[in-house]
Amino acid sequence: MAYKLEYLDELVKAAAGGGQAVNFTLSEPDITRILHEALEETDKIKVQLVQEVFNFTKEKEIEVYIKNYQLGCTHLLDRLYQQGQLLQLPDAAATSFYKSFYQSILSLLSFIEERFSKYFDRLEKVPDVYLALTKQEMRQKQAQLKTLLQGLEEEFVTVRLLEKLYAFVGDTSNYSATYRDIMFYKELVKELQDVSLWKKQANIYSGLQQLLVYLNYNAKEFINEMVNKIAAELQVLDDLNDRIDKLLLYSKTLNQLQLKPDSALFFRHPSVKVQLSTWFSEELAYLEHILGGLQVRQKTAQPGIAKQKIICKVPVDQLGIFFRAVSDLHLISTPSQKALFEQVAPWLSTTHRTILSPDSMRSKSYSPEKKDIEAVKDILMQLFRQAGKY
Image (tube, rainbow, N blue to C red; front, side, top):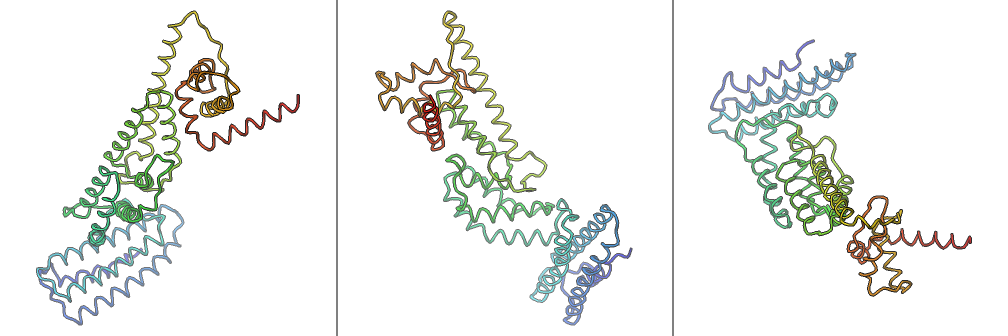
């Protein structure tokens, strides 16, 4: 099968004036001819590629075929870009010529990426000129992003984000960025420009945190900051049951957050969700281990008292609401609600907990969630209907 980029290869050589010239020596007729023929050739190749793909019978053959042309276009663009960079004093004609030539081959590469996306290898390096244009585009948005991010409260995360973006657009080394890298940074900048659209989730995860989880910004600095923040919030809770509840809420909310498919800052590293979920699991196991040890010590400290507890098939939050309502209606006489919870809690357990904290039950009854209130109302209606049957 013929190599269809051969004539484009010849045009790239002609653009260099037969060598690696440091001065732009092409005449105006040569410029016009090369650009016209490059445009015609790329349009012809697009048609031929589609026609020839239909001649293949195996997926692997198509994959190799498309990858060869992807690499071929990248090689041509890199050679052309290097020629342009060698010019000592490029004038307007030279700049315009290279820009137009780039666009012709880039249009062919974009056609291959869009038309044969299934076989396009996004782990391959992007052409140097494409990387340079992307960085130039992102530099123009730096000031706006800095203003947006500095307006957020999460200073540690925003500072590290800006450092990462500055390092990417300012890198002048021979760093070989892949298509996946470029796609990630472009999407990151786009989403950061609209960070105000991300609202705080369940009063737990901020809009910026949700955005970075969505894009799978799996930088260790970001994950460590999230872990430290959550650990600090757990530390202020004295009751182990409250810590476990808080941790479970964080874990549940994290699992409900959106995740953009095939997106990652570091593609081969575990995702933000996986790393945070692992930490949640380990922390939860640790807290439950401590709680289990406390329960054992309480039992051994009072060997003569064996309380037969009542198992309630409703959560602690709903039990708290129920007993607070009973107390407010004076259906039970106790010195205070605090005393009520201290007296009933030792005799109750749930399907998930054998020991209930009186303080936790009381505090949650004063800040109930709407879903728990509705659940208690539903239980009372069931009791009402059941009593009507007697």
